Image (cartoon, rainbow, N blue to C red; front, side, top):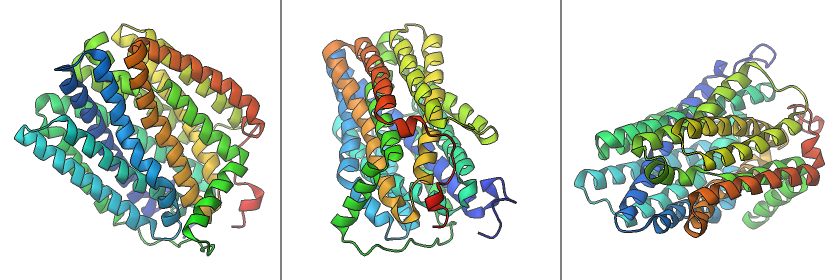
Length: 421
């Protein structure tokens, strides 16, 4: 790097990180916008001919459709991200998302949107995410010095959360104006992200271990499983969000419980990200200090409690407040987890470790949606949400006992054994 970390406090002092931030923000805005509109369209089309519980099950299938490609491809993509230029992989993935946005816009313009193309595009988006997430995650630490990395991670989270705040709101409002409009906006954002990715200069590839593809995958899995901090952080997030994730239920709450329509859906979908973005901005100026592991566990528990409150609420303002708290608590957990994983992983393993993390995160998000939709079909939306929050609270307590190294993690520093790498 041209300047030392001691003289450079902000990651935006590095042009490559500025381009990365623009690409991450634009692609996240587009992804969230597309996903919220697909979810609304699936549920709205299904409710025209089905009762609530059957339509809820289809919402769960949307999450499953996005997860299956990630499950099939993530570990392979991790190996690729450690061997090929990570910029090229991210560019190809964003280009595929741009194609999806264009296809959905054409269906909306022609008025031919039905359930099957929505599921097909959801699965294709899963393929794009399987390639984009590990490559972008592995690329980010190459753009700033290690000492600046925690701040860069916080800003990276702000980019993601800002996109997650604005994407659903823009999607809901734009869809209310005209069904093709949100997909057109998404296409423009993805095109801008693609241009930004082409502005990132080449980065040095990590040295190859010489292992075969299968052996490289095994190396990544062994590293994650053998590092109690990394494995504990990834698995805690996965189980907490699988059990307490409430996003799949939002169309049900918007249409049939709170009765606030697509605008209300956009507000609720944006609420967690609003809370998370506020906390992420605070973290850029106020480091967590010591006992970061314990703070992460406390906030995962708060995430579960906020889910329970949301599940029981029948008032929009209370639901939105619970979702804001949920997002704020989750941001602390995401910040600590992301920092620990990046700081405790050598560069030549980052692609594979990022792919394992992506697999767990996707399992938590998309399988969480499938779990929520299936549970709602069996027990009802309110019952499914509350039970999930209670179970997530139990997992938090259990993981605090199973992973003492994670619970007792003190500060977000580069470990001694990795400082010379």
